[in-house]
Image (cartoon, rainbow, N blue to C red; front, top):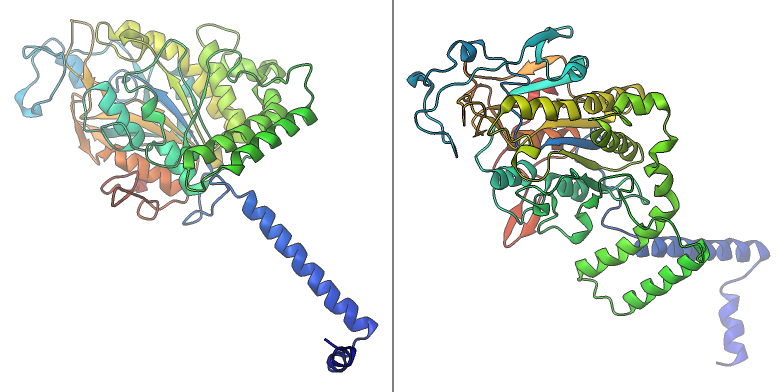
Length: 475
């Protein structure tokens, strides 16, 4: 191109100092915007916060899972008629029930527990839960829950995933899929199991199923060190560890297939582990809590120390932006859970003594810190216990009618919703299935069960499977 042509072209676009800086700034601004967008895209994560479908009442959930099946008859659903009929066959007008171990000639079993009225509306609560009873004005008791299965594993799958077989995402994973995480330095979905052992449904009941691996739970260990290897080796400082992780990321990304969800989740796990090393040790250190707070949860005392520690940690986790926390009571075989086949009195007195004070402490602590309004609490197991006796003093599994309760997260407390029949055999008034519990939780988090779907094997799957209904009385 000749100089004359260049000169003639420039003549059509006169430049002054003002126009030069104007155009240059616009160009630099465009470059900066492109850079920011590039960084945002590069750092995008499946767990980035997502706007809910409608304005939410809650931002996190704590599920107090009483594994094994606590008896509604001994806890929140008094049955005077059952006591009067104790020792007699079940009257025919109550219908039939399917059990695992109860003989055909089994007799009804009354309860030795006593009930008192608590709170502004006089809600009856068993003497097993004196601490929880003091919080009853914040609690909505659901006396008409029911499920489809009478065996532990299938009922546990249904409680967590809405299906009676493994391989489907748990409610915790669905919530991450729908809302993402509010914390970049902590796992978004945490399960704290009982130190005494595993449950019948095992870890698959908590899992992400067919959802991408990013939505899997993080299993915390029992004891004083719920997460191992958080401390950097003395010979390695933070900058060295940062360089090592950057190198690992670069090597991984050099061969990364964008469609490989498992590999992407593994890369994200390395990054999360590094951030946890810098921020989680202080959060997990319960010794920093005041004596008053530790006493509130029953920490440093027996038999509440273990469950109290895990409940306090649950409060600290949701306070730091964790989306879903499951705190399990019951682990290992049979009687180590709320699975009172042989002796309902011994089992429930022991399990309630371990959990009552920690549960009430958690509720009180969330409330005084202003966290109860945004934290939805759910208490319950995979089913209840039978009105008939098993082995003379125990109760069998019972899925036809049982009690769960909810508090916080926009739930209206100080009320009882639904009822079982006069002997506690089946849900008789306003029955609510597990899918209704799930729908209500999603609703309080701002999620619509019909919009929260994931394509799998040609079907748009969802947590509620068929159709759940919001429990309107409590929201």
